[in-house]
Length: 307
Image (cartoon, rainbow, N blue to C red; front, side, top):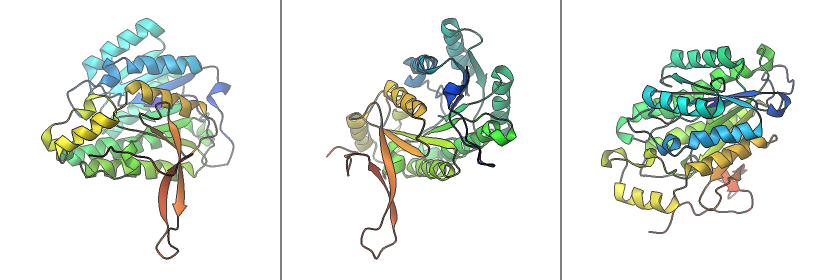
């Protein structure tokens, strides 16, 4: 998902980038809006009206134009018509795109710029959960959002004519922990968290959103997609959150101008999001230091329920 109007600092030259509020309007581009990327089902992200909520949220933040892409043309066009009826034909645009196609992804960015003039906020949101097609999962969950981030950076860099912006990568709570039910999926999320945190060191505003399992079709999995499906379902049922919770946390990330490099978890206990601190811990003075993602006000978080 790409959005416009964030606070950035250019990668070269050191000139500070600007907050979205500095511009009269901004553009939001959503990459892989979970209408069908990687599968045939339409997730609750769209069917629950969550994209409607997202558009409403960014409109309340400031006048915002939305450009979203997905592989599911029928559902994308249907959602586009619905959103245009509510917000205007010149405010929301859908474009067909498989996020694993690098040329098509770049063309989508170019189309967004041609339509709206700029890209200010980029939200990479496509994702699948299926351990049986792990190479496809790697392509969608890791390669595509990294590529989307890098393309967005080229449009946003002030030293290349951009006006700054925000890149927000939807990761997962498992990006900060382990879960044996889906080791490759977990690996894709660890990779995205590490990438986003590393890029943040360049001074550009990069954020990671890490929700618990979200009540979408992504959590409706067949037996061959995860290890120990029955236990997986127990965990999901006990920890699941709603798409609206993710949107609420997303808005917090967008509004907090000084949160470059931030990690925000979204759980049943913290539906509006809670920042995590990534710190290096030297536990015993002998072993190598290691990274720990610590809650702001607590030292531990019960991710999973007792069996």
